[in-house]
Amino acid sequence: MASTFAVETRTRPPAAARGAIRIEDVVKIYDPDGAAVMAVDHCSLEIPAGEICMIVGPSGCGKTTLLNAIAGFHTITSGSIHLDGEMLCGPGKPKADPGADRIVVFQNGALFPWKTNLENVAFGPVVQGKMSKKEAHDKARAMMADAGLSGTEHNYPGEISSGVRRRVEIVRALMNDPSVLLFDEPYRALDSLTKSVMHEALLEIYYRNKVTIFFITHDLDEAIFLGHRIAVMTTRPCRPKKILEVDIPHPRDYSVLTSKRFRELMDETLGAVHEEAIKAFELGEKEG
Image (cartoon, rainbow, N blue to C red; front, top):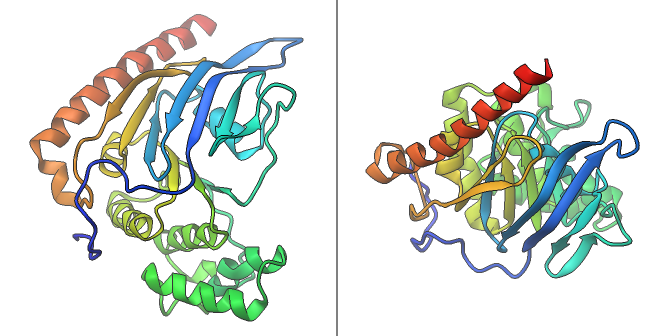
């Protein structure tokens, strides 16, 4: 299904006023006084405002550790992370303050099962005192309609499909007007058909909101279809091995999966990831 939005065709993301991430020489060592496990090793990466940056690499390589540092869930050992030029964490401040400018969409979901979808979407601004209940509900209804969720407002999460729940979660995240959305394999549990629908839904939501997206995945088709760039990470400790520009114009639909350029990018990405997967396997064998 092609996107219904009239969006200028381009490869790079549209200009955005906020959401630029700069990761500079970040190191993360777990248990520095004991086992001293290095999860992230002098990692540097710049993500322009409004870009969809896909992060791929072997399981356990440190991708989620990096996401958690951006979100403010984990400390870093050294280096720094900036958002729009302001230091989130770095020298003298090893842990970022969590904030509504960076919203995580978790792999297992986080909707309140006892609240309706509308109440879930409106919850953040109300509990933070940013909006009255009426204001939040009015905005939530409008955003849900834009995301194709009209008619589900009064359902509970348990009454809708997993794909629709994922869409509700994304709209709930956007209710806080974040600069950055942080995704940790949000579609991992979905079947391939539902996943394809969710990919196009996410792009449609993105075209409307122009938010920066930091998206961890093991699905290379997903990485190429969604991303402006793909950062292939090394096996632990994590750092960029290769950055690939996805020079397929936006807006995209699933017809691009059969294009020559898509297959070329797949071969290039797969080659880089496979090298690191072999290293991870050999390391596991040695550690075992």
